[in-house]
Image (cartoon, rainbow, N blue to C red; front, side, top):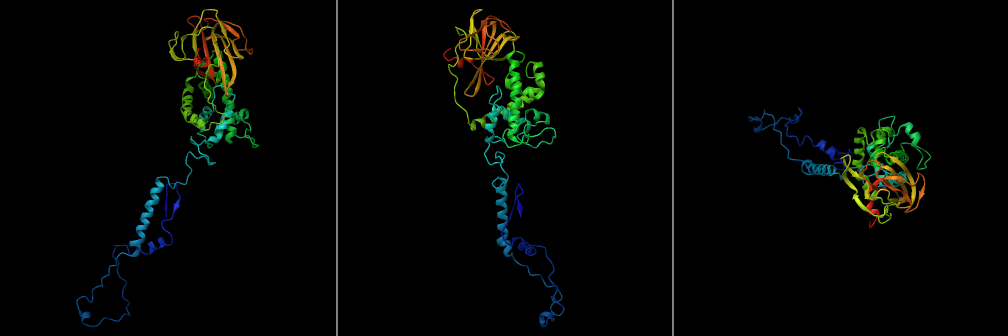
Length: 405
């Protein structure tokens, strides 16, 4: 018998080849052994030969030639052993499941998670700004590699929930009668609720101008170090940067997995959905990376600056609900309007550096309704409107939404 690299035994030859090898071992051994002695009762030789000089010498052993085992069976054994060894090394005879094969048998593009989880990842983040299905999957990957095999008694399941955390976020989401952190679906939904709650807090802090940065990064930072630490730093704090980077590094592979399972996905492209927030769209600073005119720090300019005279009218680009209207340190007087969902994604617009507010938080607005007046409050070098468009919490280029403008 020989074994492949996964420990699966394969027979060398059928039948009694192993026993025959044992029987022929002496025949193939070149070490000389004495012949069996002639029995004492054998009659003594007579005649002239008996009196010759060799009569008293030991009789020479007659050397036998190769037997059938050596000529026929052994070459076959060697050949079979080589073939099985080669197939085993190349993985043809590998009896273990491939890494990209889920226990249920469905093919996966990413490690230990298959496409059957994608609908749950979508459901867990459906009403969440800033947390996508792929980001949630990457978060789980960073926590456990999608393996429910932690040695810790305090952190359980693929989302590594503590007992206290599970009491807060855990539910029986798949309806099997049990709420457990070891149930993958329950764990996905529970971590989704936790992340989305943190994203909502980060969005509120960013809207108020208390923190700055990408909602997804801020959410992961809040998970790693706590909301207070992010609020204190005003951005992703240093202790959380490695965790955030490790999750984001995993993001592309899960983006691919979600794309390969296009349930509920649409291909809508941004068009002239929004109306201009000011009468004349004179761009004084476009969307993209730039050095801030006051701080000198190079970073993403999250919106478009439209030059306009002090006191010019600013209008809502689309109907919606005012999510925030107030004074912030960086944006000055600022209005944020939530327009609801567009093809399943949350759409928001912001209007900053205003000299006056004409709406209040919680108020419903219609397209073209007055929301404020152009100004230069906050960190500003002169009168202008800083206009932003956010899709699922991510900054996008507003000009794509304003069409011909």
